[in-house]
Image (cartoon, rainbow, N blue to C red; front, side):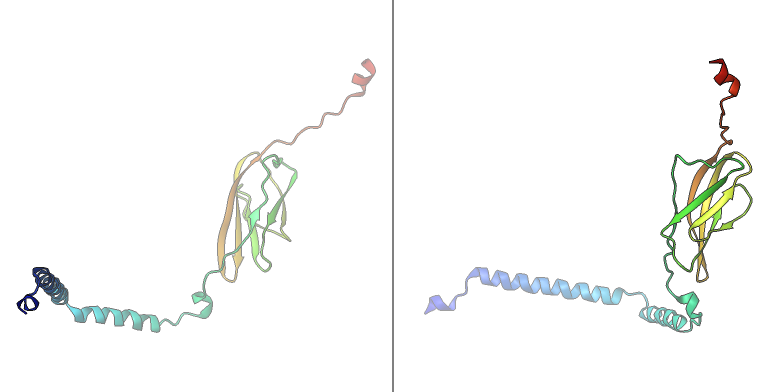
Amino acid sequence: MTEQMTKPAGKNRELILLALVALIGVAGLLALQFGRKNTNSLSDERSMVQSGAQNNTAPEAVSAPIQKITGELVTRNEEYPEVGQPFVFRMTNFAQGAVYELDPGDGSGRRAFTDGELKYIYQKTGEFQVSLYARFEGQEVKLQTIKKEVKVQRKTQKPAISDIIED
């Protein structure tokens, strides 16, 4: 009978360790609770932010989420505009209802696209930064900027009749 009454030493150690962990946990929670600086000011700040958001009386068009306007210029590196000759700028992925404008970069101002195309004549040579803009439902976005080099007009050489006769 005396053997059943004695507890093994390992169980006492487990109980002591469990009680110690519980005390440390309670002490940590108390430290966090009393460690707050001023709990009233935090709730006041939250209520001011909420009431400020509720007083927002912006019109629906302004507070609506911003939509992505698509559109980009078709660029081919082998195509160079020539001075005095019409050059056609083309667009892809353009949205119906949006107004697209091109700034040719030569200081002449923006020009509007029609059905995804714009013919423009450069008056001088040089390298220009061409920018594509779009306007839709009150917002304006700069979609793309590319560099275009404007070259001097190519001269087509017509063979002279004298060259043909001499041969």
